[in-house]
Length: 134
Image (cartoon, rainbow, N blue to C red; front, top):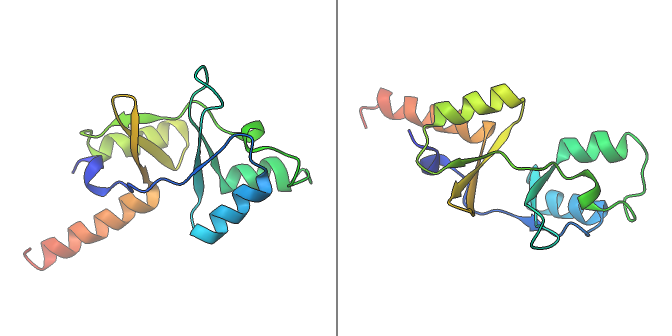
């Protein structure tokens, strides 16, 4: 199975200069675990901010949610793979780098994300189809 078959296509983004409070609000509102952080300028690259980043880098250190900026704790660069890559390869990358998500790219365009939850869900669907002869 290829990653573009199970990836999440709708990516939520946030500006690097947004506050951590804004990021938390968006994550809770959308019920998501990460946000794609837009580049600050043409010399910058996309990054990602996760719930884990916020808890360990901000909340655990008791930093101010309104003055701490997303760009201060953003993880860069993104781990990106081509849309035609096998899911198994994505899982191997997640294992190697101890990450829970990989971004799917078509050239320089970020077109989706695949997470451990996506992999787990796809495996359940695959097995259910096999059991029911679909």
